[in-house]
Length: 319
Image 1 (cartoon, rainbow, N blue to C red):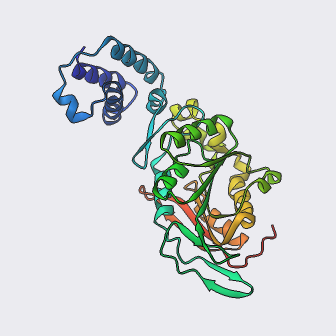
Image 2: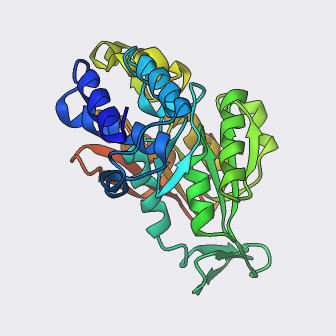
Image 3: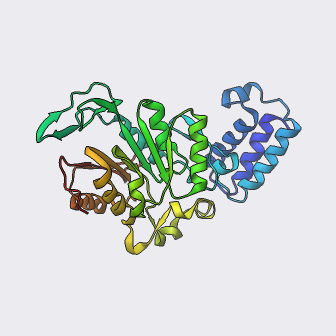
């Protein structure tokens, strides 16, 4: 079978489960993965015969895809921020919306952090986006960031790749997820401090230091919304990373906001990815906790998807 024949055959088989465009996109990813050739190269080499090993891979991948397995799990790879990440069923497949969240964080000016030292206001005049000013010494020090519920590690790895001097931490309740994230950090040559930790367990919070930025894409899909979801998501992606009880949809946002009151430096920033139906509720929650500069941002689909808040100067930490 030639490269061109393999592509057309797979696309035709996938049209049973997907629309024509999606089938073509998946077939493109699979044939590129098998041959190492992108679209233009495959046109040049369209009459090349697949090797026996390539044919075996194609047959195996096709069987999995026809069972609704997401192509990212089949190929054990997904793309995020222009980088290839290893993924398996221990982690969610990175989404474009989460990439938008990472881009928002990376574009937000770190300079301008303010601190109160000995009851005197000091405004940090910082031109180095990798540094903030220590509230204790006034010296510049690396920005510290924590990703809560890191999954594949796509957010901390992408940010560390862009800001190498940042001191980046990531936590997850799943050991399997952390193994995936560690593999991605190693592959991308990024130094991340990983922690096995349940953020809902307040007794574990003391194990973590202070941060300038906290980001989280926590479970936010209500269990009642599962019926409207795609079968391949429900069957293969980890439910612990997807769902929250209908009666307490703000569970993770509330806990993480409380954690941020204790572990964000003065004027530190808190970023959330959110359920599109909970934008007003998450903003109101942050207001009730005393956060300032709250902003609700839409994703590229025009849906409420991201929220940012700032821990106010000398904000009370009583929770």
